[in-house]
Picture: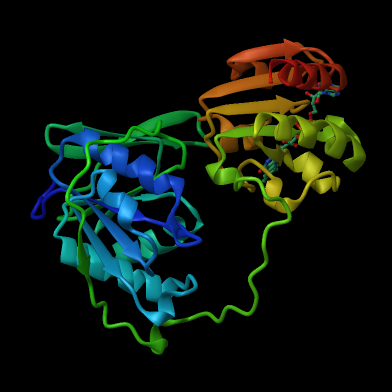
Length: 324
Ligand SMILES: Cc1cc2nc3c(=O)[nH]c(=O)nc-3n(C[C@H](O)[C@H](O)[C@H](O)COP(=O)(O)OP(=O)(O)OC[C@H]3O[C@@H](n4cnc5c(N)ncnc54)[C@H](O)[C@@H]3O)c2cc1C
């Protein structure tokens, strides 16, 4: 049983380009529904916090310092730890993003907080926060809770539909984490913009992925990317397609690639190997296009189309164009 000393939920809101990421709103909306006390926001490194009150944040704890300009594990761990202590929250929820996955385990270890990672759902059970998370490459789901005074939970992006709660006061509280240059353990030498302007795979609401069956980079570029663009989706790929050079490493979905949970995942000519499924089976709607009616992916697909992707994908694209 959790030895709760704090009160309410603190949402660690990540920012990009000075604005909250979509995951911040997803988590604030969900936190308000949980009924576990007041919801506050934690912002590390500053940015435009004005929208957080409209999304139900009673207080906005801001830890800002010049060393927080770029992500570094040491400085962010210290800043998040200070924000949690200042908030007095019983629970902290954060996105299972690159930053959340890196910092939260360290925050937990440093402060003795319990941690539940990679949740795809959260619920209030008798006043305790319970996180549901996939295990064994998504073959089973477990419910996990913490027994420490403060419980940390990371949640996969797109796990919750955006639902704006009633606005709250949003009083800004500045937190001094005692940061200095000594807390920065890495030096950022260069920041490279992603080649594609589309939403990052892990946060994308729609994904169109292609597999080995594309047979060439030219085919991937002329079939997968245009369909993704027509749907406002991000392009992804199986490892076989990435290894063959059809798509970039950052586009790989799966156990050794990115774990995604979009509203819509379209798999074009992907067999559905367990390592690929591990990265996408929590997608809300899965559409599989495969020539082989026995392909394993059909066992997980919401909609299955037995057919040649080189015919089905252009037909889908033409239909989308007709509907616009
Ligand atoms: C340790 C480890 C980690 C791995 N990590 C990952 C990972 O992160 N991500 C990942 O994806 N894989 C990963 N793999 C590889 C994985 O096991 C599979 O080999 C890979 O996912 C297969 O990719 P694929 O489905 O594109 O190719 P295939 O398995 O070759 O499947 C191609 C499919 O396309 C269909 N097809 C062929 N032509 C057409 C057509 N014209 N139209 C429609 N359908 C067609 C076929 O029927 C077949 O089902 C990993 C493997 C290991 C051992």
